[in-house]
Length: 400
Image (cartoon, rainbow, N blue to C red; front, side, top):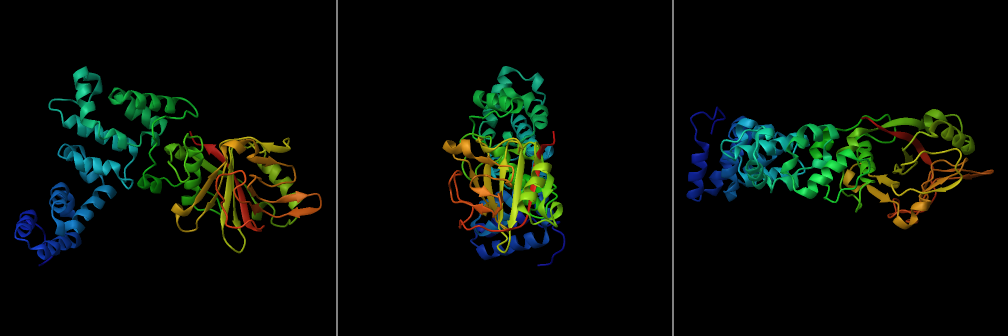
């Protein structure tokens, strides 16, 4: 079979005929040929090809290929001209998928466009809808709404794209969304779905660091947003609020104390550069092992505090070098919030279970990650003291 244009060849008819005759190997061969030689034709006929492949056992590779195309390039199927013909089951399957490569406000507008097109004579202007129109649209999109990541939208996106359609939402979700985007630290009753992976990949923050990369910085910022949520679970849901934060470098040991091995002096320099800077993240790479450990302090480090500081939003973490799914986050235990942070003038960052080091009189104290004392999970497999190859402190700044 030559690899010239698909013009004049009815591939769907050929596939359906071969399937009826039980020519499974022939169907598979055609599917492989289309994948390798005619991606553009598949895109132009994506729904027809996907439907044919999904109903034919020997075309599972072609079906998977179509599905991946729709997820990675959703514009080929969610354009206003095409969306009316999108079957409900296919649409919901896309909405459920964490890999959908589309901004969430655009996902929501696609749902609106799809629902409006299912009702004859209805315009997309919500101000012109009657009560009957609203109820009809609510019925059409009822199965779609639970799969939209509304809490991943910025307040601006929510205001512009969602508020005009707020009457379409169930009462509790409507209340949660309005309060979430209007009140600081509001804790929704509605389950918060994780931000889609496709969005996370596109929105990696810049970070000036020799310890962490952009993906790791993004993960930390996501967990900072999560730290204010109720019913947290380790490795749990993430909120788009993370993209409104950035990490600003305050201190780097190799830069700011490159000629000084005196931990007491280092502690003074740290206090000088990082005091009263608001919420901060400290991260360090362990010498010899390369482990990356860190902690989040939602409060300001202070030169006037001596002793334990109470906070329920602090957490410590360890980062896997290659796989973000293997990162460990350990939130402070509810009963231990009063000892989450420890302040002492000659100490570096101290998260109780993770101590960055310091000086006690004439005695040098090396860093240590203790095992599950104040925080929920151990972030290191050993309690042995270690040395930092380098460590850094960042302020957590709001970009709004």
